[in-house]
Length: 79
Image (cartoon, rainbow, N blue to C red; front, side, top):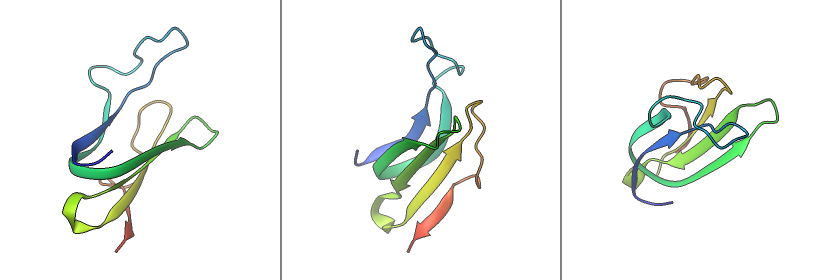
C-alpha cells in the first residue's frame, strides 16, 4: 500500500473472530508506504514499511499475543 496513516494489525481465530480488542495492535502511526506482512513460523508477524517521504524503511515484529517485540517504532533499515 502507499500513503496510509499508520499500520494496525489484527489477529483472527479459526472461526474468523477478532482476537485482539478494538482495532487491533497499532504497529506505527504516521505516513507509511509500501508495507509488507509475513510470518516467522513461531506465531509472530513481521511487518515492514516505508516512512512516507523520508525514504526510511522500518521493520517490526509482533508476537502471537499482540506484544510489540522490537523498539517502539521498529528497527530502522535504511537510510
